[in-house]
Amino acid sequence: MEEGLSTDVKGMTYASRDINAARDTLTNHSTVRLGGSYKNGVWRLYEPGNSGIVVSRVPTSLVGNLGKEVPYGGWYSLGKLASTEIKMTSEGVQVFNKFMVRPPLK
Image (cartoon, rainbow, N blue to C red; front, side):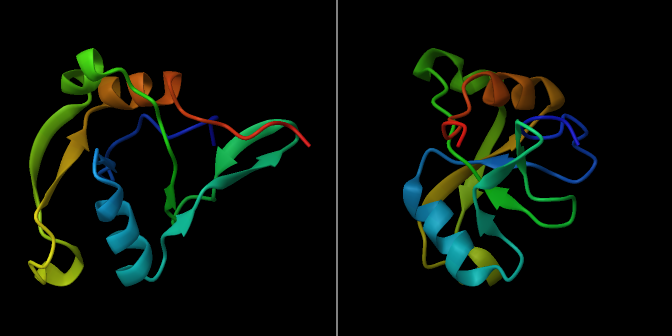
């Protein structure tokens, strides 16, 4: 697995500008975890099949390059959250990875 998010978006990769969307996902999705870890000096998300939530500081001027922004009401279509999420393209994932926040090496 490469460092950061995989650019293979056959399985959809999402981003959101709303911290509440991340909180909703952590609370209501059984396989999503926060962050990643260092393995052999390279910071990686959890292994494929285990999703992770990470932070990227993409400049506002580049957010439109991530992909299409669509409404997000929360997991299980509960509709309790009035937010949006971005369905990222392969190119969007590359932009996201460039600005991803990584913890310091231990």
